[in-house]
Image 1 (cartoon, rainbow, N blue to C red):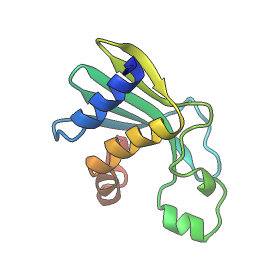
Image 2 (image 1 turned 180 degrees about the horizontal axis):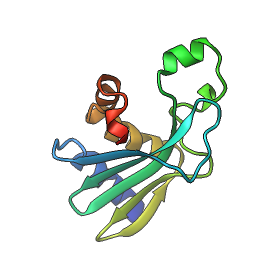
Image 3 (image 1 turned 60 degrees about the horizontal axis):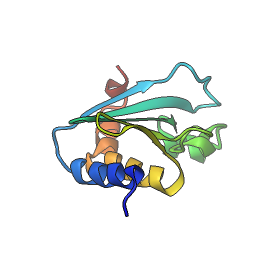
Length: 127
């Protein structure tokens, strides 16, 4: 039998393939930068569902990692102790951790070519 946790995850994975999804990526100033990494807040809006999470991000990651700059080890990782928060009109607020969180992040970012957008417009996505 499916729990609300399973229902909302399946609904997200199904709905995320739609191209009419609002995505907002902003710098989260509640967290101090660590070396060259900063915390970015990702927010996706689907019909009746909002997905938001905080992740470490390093601009020009390949160059920074070649120089062994501090903070590169955090790149593309969720902020420790946080998860992927999903706010559903029907089921309320549910937080995903571990593999479930990574599955939702992969679906959101890779199905919508978020990385391609960031790499082609490295500063525009923050404003």
